[in-house]
Length: 321
Image (cartoon, rainbow, N blue to C red; front, side, top):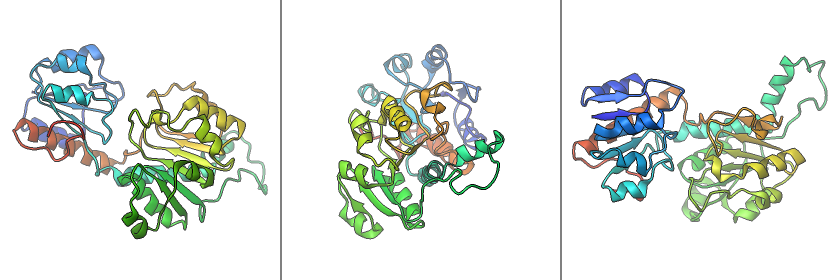
């Protein structure tokens, strides 16, 4: 039996139901309660989950027959992968398929925050648009500006390629320098501090790890230009949100575009959401219809591969294969 923590798009759900007994939580916008999850996984051999589900020791211990966990996401920080490995449970995810959609969203946030699109839209509805003004809702240039990418994985590289269409000067910081990509893509490596000091836009594309937790804090924000825009489509924990609020409120940096938050869903009264120079989205980086269908099918296929005794295509790093 497979338990799904959410009803997934119909083609992928049908694919699973034709091949295995399935049960699932039917609420679209409400996560499965912990007590329900623990009860439902009791007989499950496969668990199909979302990035919003905490799959920890307690959940795995409630599932003595569990062989595989498949998450419909590229990130897997919501799963205790080490404990799964100890218990012989294979964990899979969906990298690659969501790269382009997430890069689209990151660049859209960059543009929206830099050009004050949401703020300008709200001005219309508030009746603040009285006439054309030389600096009314004026934002920052994007074409020809400098972009710093922190984390040059699939998504970071895809954002860099989009920036070329805007004649942006692209810099990157990553744990490993890639000179081959530098030459091929026309991008330049910079140490983190130098990137933060010199770039007009900074876009985050690192995974959530102990090393990246809070990597953009008061010191890093103070290095940035007062005209700089920060974009985060990675994970909320990468940024110190209190420090970001202070930096935006004081004018230390110009604006921020955020698709992720430390606690999700974010509280509507969160201080960051009260600032006019913040563009906030509800973690929709991969939320194109086509991409979500592909993610759902990919997660389903790998889950069945494991249950059928085959090797998965996309096991998470550090887990069993």
